[in-house]
Image (tube, rainbow, N blue to C red; front, top):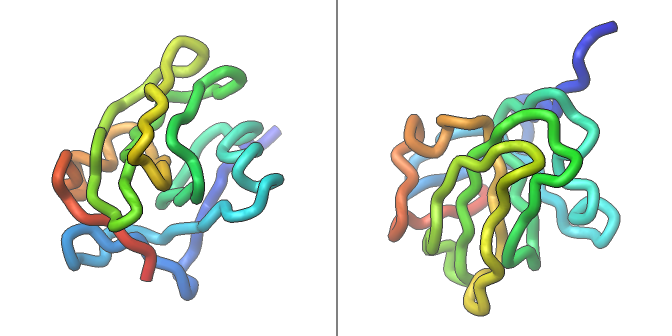
Length: 120
């Protein structure tokens, strides 16, 4: 049995960090896709931008991920690596979206609090 990956190939959507193209990016912008997120996958390549998402949980996840919580302007409020079943992010009133990526990706991409993220 092959693992279930969420892979975002070179398509029209890209994650932009501080003006730099850093990764392929899918956008979860419906109730169904926001609710599902990365659940049911064994790995992720690229990033998943979840709109209208002030926090995430790791219940049901199979692997650790990096998350960046951003405000309406894409300014990063929090960056964290969270583990399956035990992690999550706190709900933030000023948060507009959460970006999920493979563990270690945010550091590799230079994303930190105060960075600006967008989808291009």
